Length: 298
Image (cartoon, rainbow, N blue to C red; front, side, top):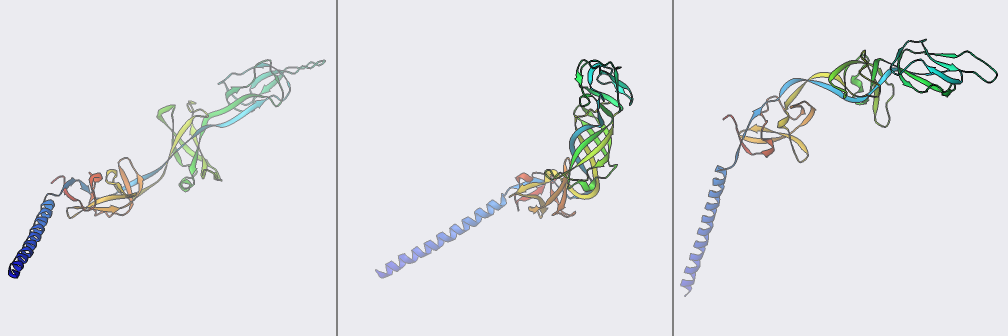
């Protein structure tokens, strides 16, 4: 009886060992089969290149007149007549109004109000018959042959801007036209709230197209420099970090990077790459670290 028991036990042990061997062989075969059919992603690669980058400052602002002067009468009385109209161009010394300063019991000649400024009549404040005093504004005279584009420059960029710095100004009213200007004034103080510095750009305006109060955008070239760049499409994000994938031995290797200025379809690489690296520039959103790849041209 004992012999039979031992025989059955031995067969059971042999059977169990054989089962484990078969399971192990099947598992290895499954792994090998999976490896043989692993996904291979076709990609395009290119190496970083050195290129000239132009750093530009684009800032919005407002048009102001070169000068604005409000005209007053030196005497009190009744405005008898306006001698100028809106948009009239006047010279300094031109008569602009007549004031009747008669008082009860007295008779005076009409007082002639003359301009002490040259420019264009931008506002007519009073109508004939209005009672005025020396504190009553009569006209606003502006000089817009040259206008000022006033912009607020971030303090981090002000070091690149200098007096007589050339600028290009565009206005929403004339989207296809560019006006050439020059920096003529940089404020000596910064705005403590916005951390910006006011900069004035003088723009020739012979046709008076640019008008005070208009919204504009100014572009200034800050500097030109050599930098490493790659296609913008090569850059992706993993776990909040900007990365690219590099082709290494038929595998994609994730590489953290730091970027700088961005152009239309390329981006500056500040750190993380070498010129000899083969950067994957297509299908990066489908890749993970150590994915198998092949060149799309193969």
